[in-house]
Length: 203
Ligand code: FE2
Image (cartoon, rainbow, N blue to C red):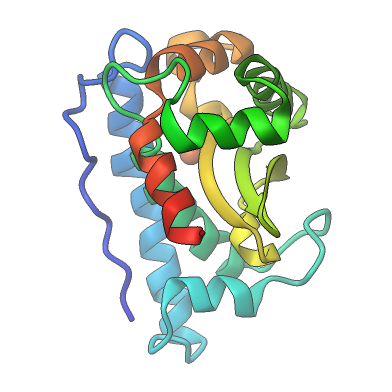
């Protein structure tokens, strides 16, 4: 079924000064829109227009995140990943979570600071384009990183939080300083309410 490009869940200026309106306009209206349009076109051409995007992602993954993927997979995964990413941020977000989510982070990583360090390191060490993730894998929280459009959804893990580390996510605001963007993301933008909802839904 056709996948809709949802509007951003906040105003284009809402994440300033950490992410500019210019970045969000290009990232959502150009990059994300192109993935959605390409996905809908390819899914129709390949007889998969009756499937959900999650079904297409799982069916078109070639099983090896390190190998190049098909155009259908890349566009489906990038359409899904970006919708998820927008919801992972909010104005006035970031810092440590609370409640059951913080308890789970402490149990599985040792501390919030250990989580933060592993998550930022995943983003920094993803060579080239990709994503850093907090996932639930067999009941345990894990940090992962994926190249290009690869999504943990294709590999049987439940995505809880993601950070886009493609250059288009930060280059207008931070140029080559990916770690500065990551620091701003973790300290000022993470929407822990969304992450907690994802964890509760998966439990
Ligand atoms: Fe992106």
